[in-house]
Image (tube, rainbow, N blue to C red; front, side, top):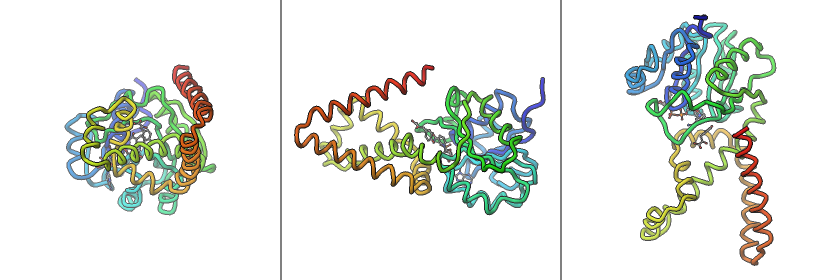
Amino acid sequence: MTDPLFERVAILGIGLIGSSLARALRRENLARVIVAGDRGDVPARALALGIVDEATDDLGAAVTGADLVVLGAPVGATPAIMEAIAPHLAPGTILSDVGSVKKRVMDMITPVLPEGVILVPGHPVAGTEKSGPENGFAELFHGRWCILTPDADVPMGAVNKVARMWREAGMIIEIMEADHHDRVLAITSHLPHLIAYTIVGTAANLETQMSAEVIKFSAAGFRDFTRIAGSDPIMWRDVFLNNREAVLDILQRFTEDLTALQRAIRWGEGETLQALFTRTRAIRQAVVDARQA
Ligand SMILES: NC(=O)C1=CN([C@@H]2O[C@H](COP(=O)(O)OP(=O)(O)OC[C@H]3O[C@@H](n4cnc5c(N)ncnc54)[C@H](O)[C@@H]3O)[C@@H](O)[C@H]2O)C=CC1
Ligand SMILES: O=C(O)C(=O)Cc1ccc(O)cc1
């Protein structure tokens, strides 16, 4: 059997995504040792699941001797985690992450990155509304995009190693600038989550009788929104706080478009509604076709 890609991989935050990565590393024999760093009872739960070799709440100890460290906690935890691990990161170590926001995370890490540690930020664009190590699964990444956003001066050898890890986990790799990533994800992921949170929140704010009926007679459309709106509150709080500009920009456009639709409904402009719905139906078809390609 060939040597694993990494000797010791430390995953800090072994929740849905971290534990899915641990499972994929195991399945593909990509790491000789996998260590989880987390807090509370999570390290013990990860060990009990048998998905890591070691688990600890001492993040400094977790990264000691690691050749790859992956941050898998909500992005708002980045400064605290960096403070705990920076003194223990050896030169040559690759530091990566799985955060849904890239620019702010890089800005939080870069000033405290020890000399010789190589930052290769990543975002596996695959997930569910669930959280925690029990809900992870190795197949999560199959056929999905993984976006890497390294700075231009990062050694290609390190970028290639991280890319290879995700490729072996089943992902398709794209490299782009962090700012661009954040603008694209603001529309494709962050805005949809915000809309889902709003719709379900609006339903919850209706008078009690009506709110109960919304749940009782919930049609497929609303049910789909409740799945997204059931996503982790802390993770999504951190996404919106750390991709503020891009989200506010896209929200501005969204609000204008919504107002135009409101007007069309008020004035009975059926052709405006039909024209938009025809365009969006074509986009749905293109998205489905792209998935099947
Ligand atoms: N949930 C999803 O569908 C996706 C999430 N992401 C990103 O992945 C990251 C993790 O998300 P999930 O796995 O869904 O979250 P999760 O809630 O399942 O897991 C996060 C883990 O981080 C740990 N944690 C939090 N603060 C910590 C700290 N200060 N020190 C050590 N551990 C800490 C928690 O105890 C938990 O085990 C986030 O940055 C998110 O933006 C990326 C792609 C998809
Ligand atoms: O559950 C869903 O539909 C998702 O959209 C999952 C998801 C959440 C956050 C990401 O950064 C990427 C994927």
